[in-house]
Image (tube, rainbow, N blue to C red; front, side, top):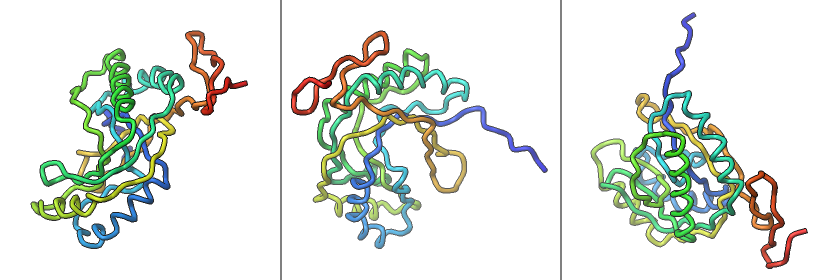
Length: 216
């Protein structure tokens, strides 16, 4: 029996994920597109995410360096409130849903995440953030299906939700012709709004609840 050779690199990004009910809401809106364009490469609903920083192919040994500072970042800030809105496409090849809500907070979080990666010595292409959730890619040279599917999402307006966790994700994109899969390498919960900030000593400071009262 041949011993399986483990890859020396992993394709990594840092992301947020909508809660299940927000994903189910969008999936219902996509039913006509699923039926009309079965030949598109649809991402699995459980893999839907909003990328904050794409780090690319990293040596496997580099990934553990990211864990402590990302955990500290998540523990020290409140979740952003977002919503999925409308749809669009990149170059008539990639179908996506748009992101609405606290976009200023989302851009700030992305900047903080990217600063962590740079402090860990991770080289990556620091492209401007374009908040979106990738839904599908065209399999063949058939741009019309992507454009039409995007038009079908134009009126979609999902409910607001809070991103619960910060995700460090690995993917198999570029590793063969099979379906695209993502896996959480690790994920960290954001500080609840009724919790105080984490101090330099790692202790939880007294918090303020959502109604403005001091937390016990």
